[in-house]
Length: 77
Image 1: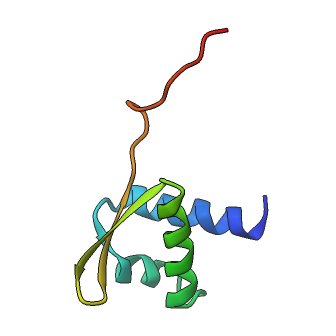
Image 2 (image 1 turned 120 degrees about the vertical axis):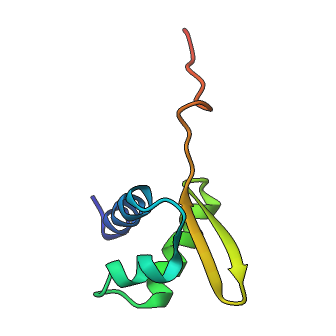
């Protein structure tokens, strides 16, 4: 697993265990990272459809995990 996959997994775990948490809460769980590092990875995960970032005010974001279990399509060959 690469450094980026480790970070993504770490952030997804935090967000899944704290649904609807504030970005600041996620940052505080990652004391070894800067706010920018956390935000950039969450932005990437948002663009990939893994999380939802919702602006709740100027500079404030709520982070939620996107649930795919009901949206996944199983292909039959």
